[in-house]
Length: 577
Image (cartoon, rainbow, N blue to C red; front, top):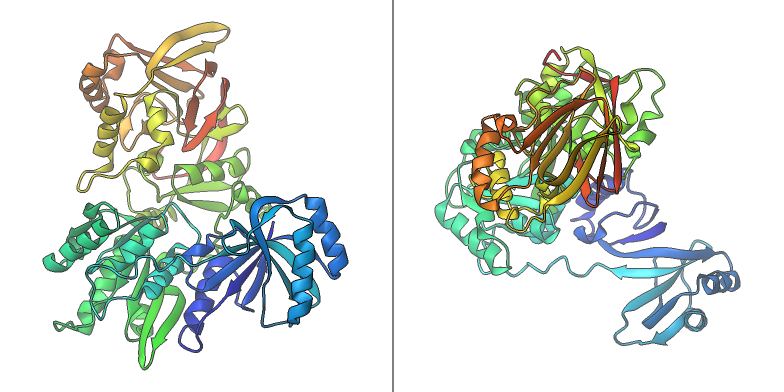
């Protein structure tokens, strides 16, 4: 599918930041306010992308275009066709009106010029007519008027730009604004559907931030009173609008300390400052690969996208790729004909994509923990939790050949499951995090919450034509690794190099006794319980009418065939396997 994105910004105040945001979204330099692309980006997040035309037909001749549109057999019970004016090529009013009328005639349904459900548009750019479905971007300022605000607060334009510069097109990053004030950045992130929260050291300000968030229907506990120095969780992205002393004095050193802390708690940081800190960041060994400004009169806000990766990788030859669609990693790896080391930066789902590209090759894989549970990375890297530490230390680690599991046409390296564990894993991003409770404990709460409505799946498991188990299950894991669920060592006897699958099955239990079984999981004594069955096999088949979860990938089938692939992947890790 081809798209035409139409951008609009005020010169010169917004030109610089608009073009930088464009480069983040489209991964190429800005060239025109009218941009053709095959990328389907979440354009409504941007304050500069005014409209998008999904191109359905194009031609240098209006008569040929009419024939192309007629072939599409479009239908809408409530539509209109408009001519979309552009600044590149002019078409006079009478001609454009005539063309739109002719296009309306070849579209089935009824027209409604006042309240159409579908808007089709024709535009003429540099000798080519383009026809398509028009989408407007008019809802980005829904949270502009909040109950509480300050004159020096970030505008929603600045807040959205900061989020877009750091987050890009991603949907699954964990984001924090550790100096969130009244919550402008948090609210805009929530409006975009992102996983974002905020904190502020000021009790009164953070309270007003909670009221703002609650006013628009979100959980007020997404904003807490907290000192940035007390944050121990790791995030994918932090966004900090550095205080610059409106109500109380703050020194340059204090400002840089806040930025440094924001960089420590996240893999990437967007720092917003009122002065340029290029030399200071260089001295702090912070690299910025995006820098821009938003101007209002004589006042400038500078936006820096800071990362520490370039400091760690100094002296090494490396490339950075961003996966933009399913199986993109496979396409990327086709560019590398000789063995390379690949750093998988993401959660279980992304690690799974990388495995598909590297299995049965000589390429090496390092797992950088950026996901929700990071169970596999925590085990193979001997508990090294921070992504920055794994990256730095992995430069001294050696590769080891490990087993992979082939399930039908999919490979995975850690865990596959079918019971309530799969139900939770398949909807892990739907579970609301409980503030101040670690993820592993939140997983326990998820079990207790979900088991009330869980319909125990019926499975049949066979190996070598023998039935290993048949019946309803509470938990059913087919593992290569030890952990799942944010820290549960469900298969403590598993090995990544022994050439076997480890199966653990917990029969249907009475829901009232769930805490009893959870205690055995936590103490690694689940295998001692009568209702638990464990097996070591090289291959097996599972028959059931439910979906499973395999290293973050949800798959639905009725027959799942598993087989171990001994020594089929090169893994770089700290633990000797």
